[in-house]
Length: 415
Image (cartoon, rainbow, N blue to C red):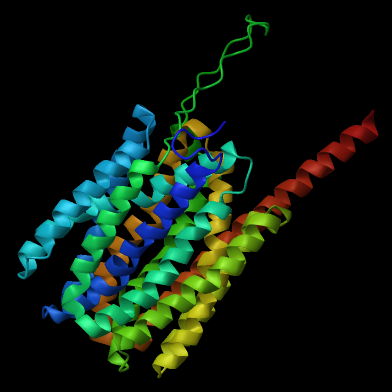
């Protein structure tokens, strides 16, 4: 069926691709350049760490609240419009704040509207891709392209204009994203399938508790536990990458190239795993990602030149690139479609919110008191711990599989 807006059967994909391209521009600024802006205001590394951890703390509530509202009301587009409008208002207030206490207060409200946009956009991408019979990576990759574009252009813009323009550029991008939401086509809420009327009604119907039953599964809890441990190292690096580069003498444009290297490197991996990832089991891929994270942070601990860090950023492809696609694949398999937004929100809470809260708070103290080398070696330890967790679950699955195979073989032999 053709869109009423443009007459194209793929307009909903194109509008969403434009939206993803744009909102990742705010991600570049909020995650990578806001810490530099705070240091420009005279905040210490510990204070920057507190401000960084504030976002994950707020997002624990906001991600679940807005995603559950989306599931309940059956709309994503309207929720994202509200979130972007909230970002715009709080961003304008934040641009006028200079005291740590006022920045902390206003930033809390900004984060309440900022974080939920991304899991909701991923949910919309998954559902629209399913509508057209395509892999959701063909839509989600435009987020990586947008991040790459803004990583470079924002770096040069701030080099020319100064770090004080960080919030102004962020507000401009938010306005553009807000306008794009007008063209987005909403996805309908999935209605649970009714039981077959011809089925045997004498059998008791098992009541479905949905997400509660899923989260009570030991394997799922173990999975999210490993995700959390791995995320600690990832978020530590994310929060203090730009500060590490600045301490090594890098300018804003060099920081832009480092962010560009990581964003561009993940694009081919997203496409490859989107097409061939189903041929590989999920846990081995997560073991690989954990190992590459450990290697990446070890190299970061030893790096002594901005150029080295730019090269190390290319490992983002085999760390986050592999991890993200594999996790989405796992989550979409274990969580029902009607709870997809809530499920991805829980993943975001574990990966971003809870991990960001601890990594920002304690990471800032470690960086300030023990230095960059110790800081990144702690991140190496978290990555190796996650590797052991994923490996243990994988070996347990192999053991269970061998027992089931043995039982089937013995049963056939006895017949």
